[in-house]
Length: 149
Ligand code: RB5
Image 1 (cartoon, rainbow, N blue to C red):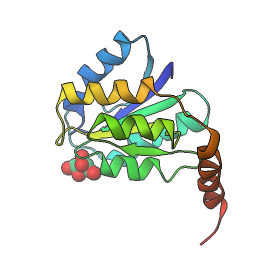
Image 2 (image 1 turned 45 degrees about the vertical axis):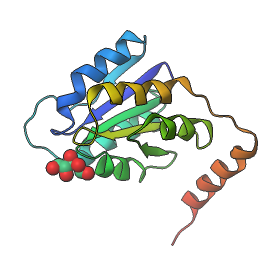
Image 3 (image 1 turned 90 degrees about the horizontal axis):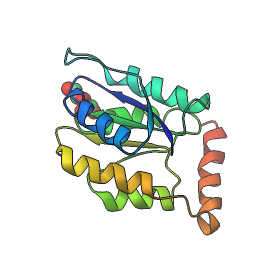
Image 4 (image 1 turned 135 degrees about the horizontal axis):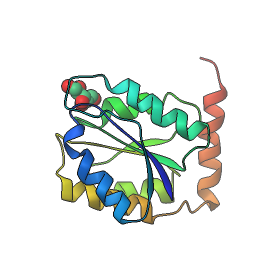
């Protein structure tokens, strides 16, 4: 992934500068969707902005941070075509790319520190979807998205 949209809430904001610097150090172009301060705000706004940027094809994927990564990933997963994973360790981040073709990585600034977050980001960015037997499973997820309850 060469171009990433980034979003966080006020709790995620504390990790923002380090993660953006890390991405830029890897040569990843980042579109910053906020938030831009530690002032209290609501994570759905930033998850939506990142998911919509992916949906419009402006970026290859997204990275989201809130307190736990939970609310912000749940929101992102409401958008068609978004496969967001919340990770606290690199193995799941890597496998989420290899097997699930995730296009959004989320984590929690109250759960992990900056160095582990960077390892998770690297594991996620370094892995490519394997396709093969996993392709039909990802297609099945997309088909479920089309169903009405
Ligand atoms: C905000 O207090 C907190 O709920 C949010 O950052 C996130 O952890 C939600 O899932």
